[in-house]
Amino acid sequence: MEDVKHQQKHHDNSTIEAKAKLIALCTQNLGGFYQANDTIESCAHPTTDHIVKIHITDANLVERTHMRMRYKEMQRQMNLESILDQVRKRMSGSAPQQGVDNDWTNLFFDFAEDISDPAMQSIWANAMVHELYRPNSISKCSLKFLHSLDNWEIKAFKKVAASAFIGKNGHPFVFRSVDNPLESDPLFSQTRMLSHCIAAGLINKGTRPLSVGFSFNYQGEDQVVSSGHLPEGTSVGYYIQSFTKIGSDLYRMVIKQPKQAVNDSRHEVWELLSDFLELGQCA
Figure 1 (cartoon, rainbow, N blue to C red):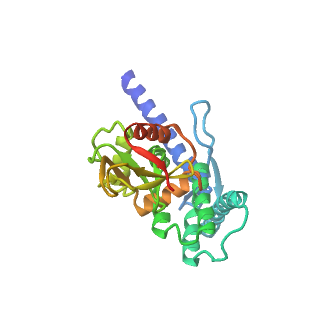
Figure 2 (figure 1 turned 120 degrees about the horizontal axis):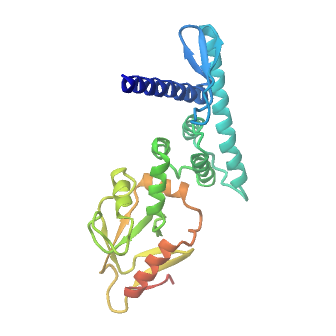
Figure 3 (figure 1 turned 135 degrees about the horizontal axis):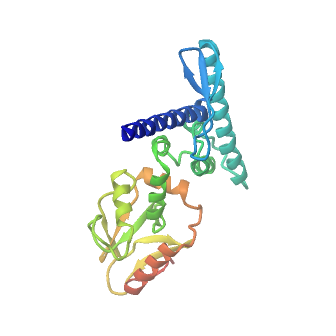
């Protein structure tokens, strides 16, 4: 009988904590937990250190609606102000006279106003900065995709992007020593993360042969795959795997621009390639 009472007590405590968690979630995002019995409940996020105190306020339907809308709009306003403040601080020098597309801008603000995570706000600020300097470079589809991403997905993408180079066409790619995107690769260690990026539509599934004459950027310098005896276009035994348009746009938003930052992953790939290929600066 004691065991039954203990289990019931534990069940009751868990239920109370779960309800408090729900009320705290609504308080944080909506300003309170609104109920049809003309009350609003609110509380801080529950912890194990103290008993949660739930505050109850009387409010009719009209008052509850106004309070929720006012709270939500205030949160959105703060989100936009935080993002735009970062945009302003990252702007310098002159920008093209060409304006940013109105539809793109409207979509940006519609999405950005609901971004409260500081790390994600920084990425959205980068998107606006890039579009101001290079209008029509980031697509609306890329904004929609960014809006659907979680923080862990951004971190996974960054691990892949850390080994990426920029091709002559301005789009990122990764070097591969195998033509199977899911096969273990000594030249590219983030195979598991790459699989996720392929499934998400950020990187093309197929690879193409690396050939003589292929040019790319490394540390701000244009480099070219060359050979003293092989004609241009001849495969050299390695492959490249390109980012999609959305992946390319996301790369611009999360990786330092315009010059690629020096990092160990990219430098390691460069050193490995240099041992087997003739790489030099473009004439």
